[in-house]
Length: 332
Image (tube, rainbow, N blue to C red):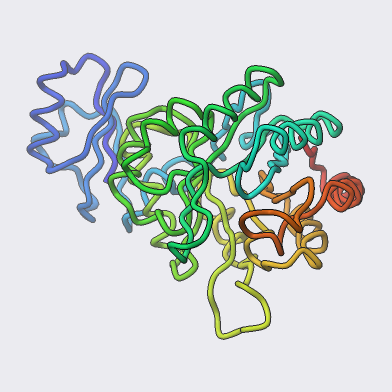
């Protein structure tokens, strides 16, 4: 259940009421919001005199549910906006990992060529093997910060674990919680207190319920700036890396109020089909795309097989415009 307390409730009283209801609470626009896991349909009589309105929810998908907030949340990314009534699809691109200042500057120039606003690059890499390239860490974050200062881009980069979450919060504009970190409540709770934009990737063995519940950890911390990213799930198929769950995307759009981003690069794992998958994503009217691109993928230190070179990215990007126009979307 979600309870909006009246605006004149003091901090001490709100804390007392939250304790009585065994509720999580946060303050928004001058009033307190209490969230409890109780499935009861009627409010506790002790709370009723202090409540402005309440919402009885059928599951732990609460703040992200359209039953609570029917309209799609609008997210502001610098000068760009997605969600709400904008009809914008955000194109995020850049290399899997930042490898050098020269490489990331070349990527920044690619965004400039296409009037894009948001650059991605990993600094802390959650690799499956301990012997693979693990990223440049804080050095990489500082490089991305220089690019932001020079070009004015939004910077999105991944947090691998809670040991460097403060560094990622300081140097980035969007915190990416990766598929392997989606269950890390320390990261999620820290993101909930940060106020920074958060993009959560779906784990490859995660149900839609579990996926949205991870967003609830951030939302219930008082941070409403959350985006969901579908990046493929593991099925019985072995010919592709993962299976991009477009059915799941349709469910998220129907049932949640959070912007949905799609990552075709990680789903397929090979560059040959990225353009086709991306066009299909645009046709669904999604809120954003996450595409890996690299000046020379043949020398990339991570995920070389799935990254597009700049000519391939440009060809794909140009092919998206007719599809976007057909479904009334603007690629930004």
